[in-house]
Image (cartoon, rainbow, N blue to C red; front, side):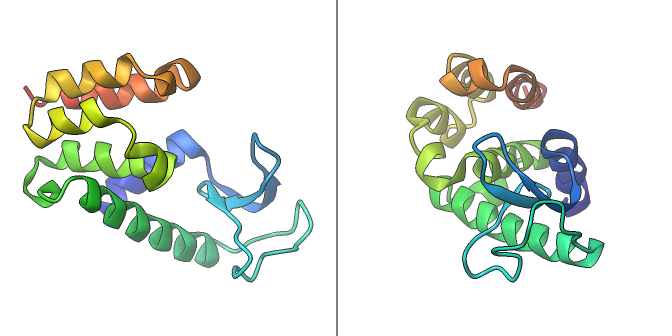
Length: 146
């Protein structure tokens, strides 16, 4: 599943082997990894190169965090079909726990494995208006489970 998740997130986030500024002007690298104060890359100049090994290391770290966050929100995540797991982890990766936890009706639908309703809740969200193509892919992945 990790390879499939990486391919999905690379398509959604892109992958850059250098320091760049995200849409909020924050230093980022790899597959959408926001550089934190405790990262060795903190303070590096925009354009500084980052190795493939480091990009992979940061990705694995970020996926572990996103998976843990997804399990906090959906304790039965590991019992779901792989596409539902990937969708939930990808959304946790994109949004982080605080923001993704606010999708209350979506999580209620996921908890009951009402995949169509969970997809509809994504489409009615502010996230859908902000990243419609990405969010539509999530919704379709859930709908295909029915």
